[in-house]
Amino acid sequence: MKKYIITGGPHSGKSRVIKRLEKLGLQVLHETARLIIEEDQEKKKLDPSYNQLYPWDDQSIFCRRCHERQLEREKELSGDLVILDRSIIDNLAYAAVEKIELNPKIYNDIVDAGYEKEVFFFDLLPIYKTDSQRKDSEEQVKAVHRELYNVYSNLGFEIIDIPLFSEDKNTNIMMRTEAVLQHILKPPV
Image 1 (cartoon, rainbow, N blue to C red):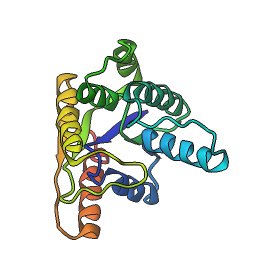
Image 2: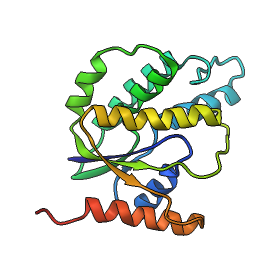
Image 3: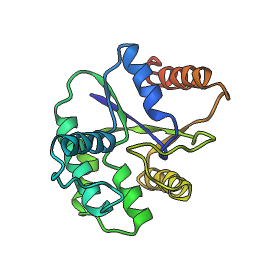
């Protein structure tokens, strides 16, 4: 299975492109961190005594949860190709920004994951907006974005920069989608 990663700092437009790729019929794995946060928020609505854990409460535990859940979700995948909205590697960047240690086992898991060596790195969108799952400050977003680039580069991945192609949101989504598709669907040499 070819497992392509799309990454970049929070609010880089990854999720919109991934949703578009999914509509075009490609298998995708949506972002695990956002999924965990949404599930915890739903549990809290149903049971106000539920003690959810957000990344802004304890990044160390949250990174561990993301790592474990991402591995579980990736094991369930089948087929020839999948596009991932982030990977377990992203936890290294978040940990570096927060200056926390992760279990060194993560490096073995990265090797075992069999990710494609080309990683799509999305530039940040010009205006950062928080939402119910994204509480990072603009400075944190930029720090995570830089660290993601460093982590993937240091692990030997080939970074494929996906810039902002247009100020128009829909045009940008379409052009970024096309840039990803041109790479992953190109015939073998």
